[in-house]
Amino acid sequence: MLKGFREFILRGNVIDLAVAVVIGAAFTGIVNGLVTGIFNPVIALIFNANDLAGAGVILRDSEGTENDIVLSWGLVLSALIQFLLVATVVYFALIVPMNYLKRVSSKKKDEADAEQLPSEQELLTEIRDLLRTQAPPAR
Image 1 (cartoon, rainbow, N blue to C red):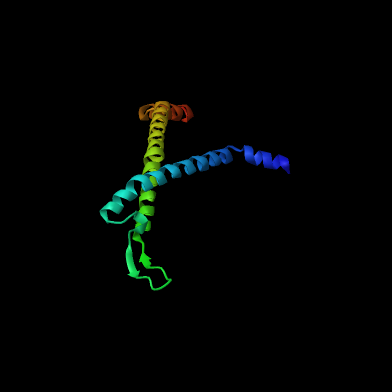
Image 2 (cartoon, rainbow, N blue to C red):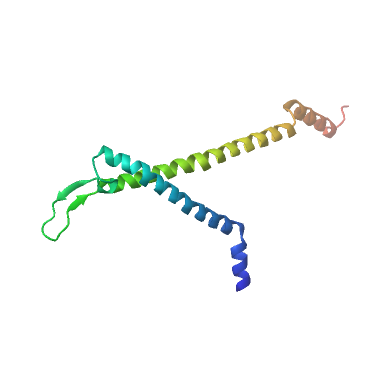
């Protein structure tokens, strides 16, 4: 039982996944700091709110002990900004370089395959020679 667990843990993709989760968590902290520290105050200033979470429309004022009912579009806007930042960084930091590496690798492979293949004329010459050797002698 422990042997199977050890094999599972030592698999390459499990280690890669663990590293990705740790880096993702650290990156989330950076994005949250960027959105909270820079974007939210600017947007709150534009919409004249104390903070972006407070930006919204009051649907019903508080009565007695009840709180205001607020349509808080600021929270949604903040989450959207965070998503767009993460998607942008993932695209430019991971997807673009990987596509470039695939393109370069594919180009090198195509060039290597093209160098190994005989030309059309060489193939036709080989076919002609094979047909001559297989044909019965002319009388």
